Length: 371
Ligand code: ADP
Image 1 (cartoon, protein in one colour):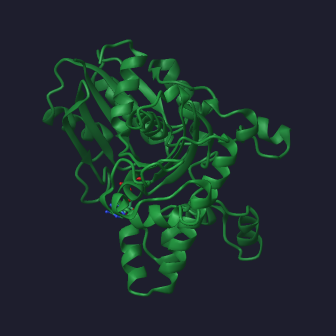
Image 2: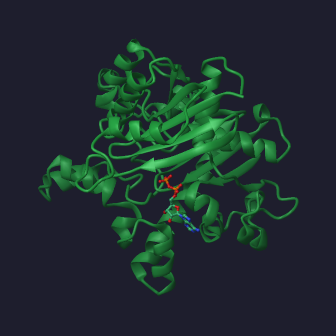
Image 3: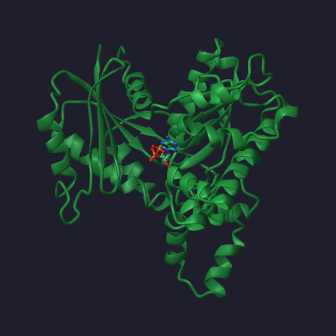
């Protein structure tokens, strides 16, 4: 079995997990990097700390999560200087996300010079979406010049849970169509046709689509013009508001769904509305992707909310019984792998995601290593 270290570097945190085959032998999180009173001064110190704590002997690869791969990176890619330069060139497309991954890559390459490193992109799984699913109806010239199109994110999660869904249902993943709903702090929906992404709800950035903890999801772009022109807000402030102070946080003052449910249970009208908006948006995307796919073999919930909130699953799919979509209350409460009633036309599944395991597997595949 081969050992792979998976690194997920954020701007102020590094999450790591060491795999031996598919078993986790060590994992952890270094937080508040570089902040006053934080654990360590910078990413280099964070990684040195991890290396001091974890036995990395026999390490066969390091797999890095990289958020944005643009149109260039459509599969896991072995990292060399040229790849680093190309990921750097993508920073204008992902200014909030890619710089941290680049820092992680740079430090890991220096500290582990003999270990091959692989970049696994959140966008890559969506490279199979056909042109009409990634093109917005704006000027071709502007779109091409500024690389404006849908890229989509959470790809490793959608790939993993759609494949697992087929396995759980005893089907061939290559012949199975799944609507996957990744509902974490970030949230996105994906239509997967025979193992390939054909539609997803996030766009050029992770901002559009479903309602999230602090991100707005879909809005009319006029909101931005209006806030700028009429309300006089600078563009950075609008971006900050839509990404960090919107979603559940913006509507109800809490970004954690558990707290939202508590406020809702206590009769808070804002929390009730926020919950309804959140669930209705999911239902709208399910309807849209039923139409995109035509035949749907399963609907799968994953990530923090999707795996743990029976009430969201039930509310999001309520009223869809005429389409053969329903949840069985006791299965749903138990978070069974299949939560739809026996014999349902379209099974509804709950599949825990595992992005790190998928990154480890994809890293081994890129290097032709055995599992
Ligand atoms: P991330 O996107 O940061 O990886 P997660 O996938 O862990 O986040 O999802 C975080 C979200 O999951 C939070 O909104 C949290 O409230 C929600 N969540 C976690 N556990 C539960 C639970 N038992 N019931 C409802 N929501 C939950």
